[in-house]
Image (cartoon, rainbow, N blue to C red; front, side, top):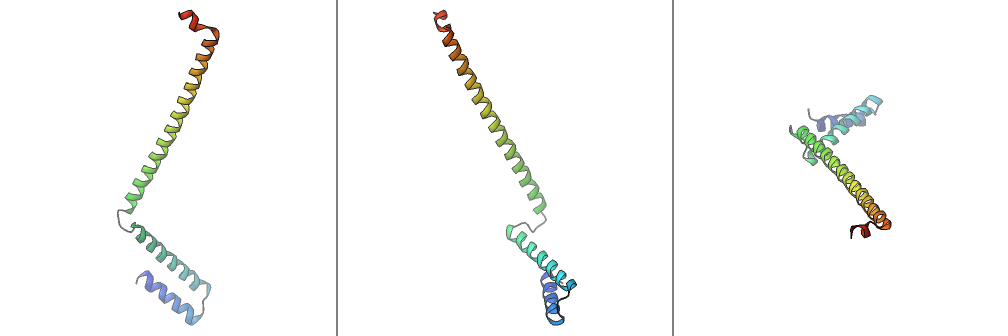
Length: 102
């Protein structure tokens, strides 16, 4: 029996006998399972390779985040180095180091 058949049978039972708590819970569970399967099928993740595909996507996302963090760190380091170099050059100019080199 498929999930659709089970859901139809539970809804019919609820309509004919009245909906007690157990029947309502079963309807909700079957509807949730059917909706999840439809959603996975719509995303193309309903086959046996879906687990591997999701694992690869997680690895790719982790690598992207690591690369982004490294790029920001490198940019900040180079900015600080540039600022310190300019500061050192301005101190040297103030002290007249340029005149000593002539």
